[in-house]
Length: 338
Image (cartoon, rainbow, N blue to C red; front, side, top):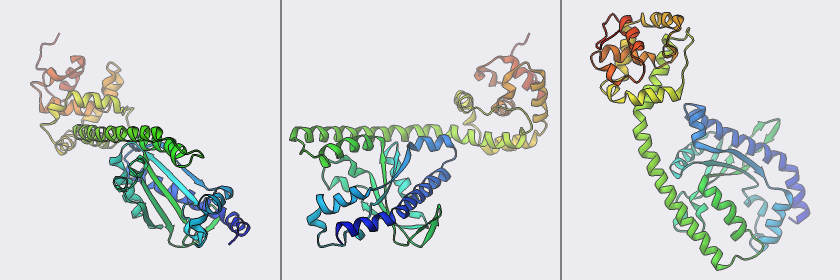
């Protein structure tokens, strides 16, 4: 196939590759969102909006007939080049790469194959930190239509998943060392190698820190999840504010007391004291304390009952709020009142 035939065929199929890149990007993005519990959690994973691209005819022809002419001269270049379409996702840490890899491999819409194994960078060119990123070739496993364009079985797309550090390094290193028109001096290569080593170490430390933080916050997240569920169940008809920052603050302050109980005990308490939503509504209507409009107020009722003798010592706000809660629960305050 000469250059003209190559160009004509690719120009004809470009809309198909554009549609396939869009389809792949959307499917992976949807899978990530489905595995996350909220938009906030999604944003903690995907740090840069996912991108998709299709090589231009000139770029593809230059690759086959100029830069790698000797390699492709006796091969079916059009078929062998599998990155005509490409998709890129940028996450925060390397510990997240394997999770997204699983989502890519589990899709029923394509056959996935790693073009670079997850840890090939250790055995390949040590200068290239980007080898630690994940590269897949996903091949359409049956004919389908997307955005009004027919996509043939066997159509390929490269999927690349990087961390922020890898992305920053690769954007500069690839253009300077591997795709630059002028050969990089040894000093430049060594500088990039030092930068790669530093970023690898930094990523390892950040992964360790994130793991420790996740373990520490698991208890808080469990209580936040059940609190949201119970608020939707019991307080859906009221003007209740579910503020993540406020809930984090209160649960963290009360974590030692909450650690004595399970979330199941909390749910059982609300079931037994089904009159509490009405009491909260009455307190809201009085308009004296805004705390009764916060979703964490359910935890206040719970701990007031369970820790009636000592809860006031851990309570960070006005005791007048607890006086109302204790009264609603049919209890007397365990501290001096005016």
